[in-house]
Image: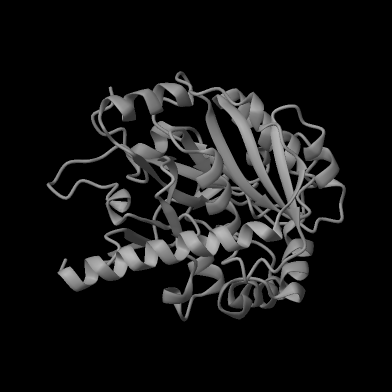
Length: 336
């Protein structure tokens, strides 16, 4: 990378940090329990709107994994989820009625909270429909992974977003609060993925899966990105640039081995496509608060009118993390 590019990236990082500092004024503290945070706690950061039906299982899942404290930004919910979060003993929550789009789709809000509270902690940033799977997650808590990353001087951990879906219509099986959504959305595409490299930010760019296959069959390059770096040993100098797809400094994006080996990586099981999806997609399309004029949600609405299912004869049923490793969707690297 040339001197000018390096300088430009430093300016960009400073710009995003200043932007997050300004955007903090949009956040109203509802419940601040950050005084309970211990120096070695694992932290989780999340934005949400009207995800009350998902929150009980989401919180229990990550509590069992070892998360010590949760940070939520509630974006003008109307379903009672803000009150629910405010009552949780290990949750700090802020609310805002400001534009999700103008906060760079929530990134500015979470960058500010991470800068203020996550310095020196491992921080996991996910959506309410994303569930982290990592090597040995069935026998080792998240703390075992972060301890190994610390011992290996690794500061960030990647996870590919894997879209999960049911067999049959998306609205066929009702989802209930507290239920594991993968009991319904148990299938995924085991192939159909493309990978390229962003030479400026040095991150991999992954697309494909059912969203490219079903919603963007003619223009797969417009399909959502599936590459994420959700787990980071946070420093107040860091900043997410585009969702959790990439960060600055750009060295945090080098979560793959350029010399022929394999770095450890995980998967985010993405349980977006359950029976609540139709109403959620209609709501978000009306709000028009998502990327590129909500082109993704326009594609959802159009396709779901024709045939509301994603399953096909090549779909594979999810078993465990080892299955994903065999398929090349994640790697345990040299973590034995």
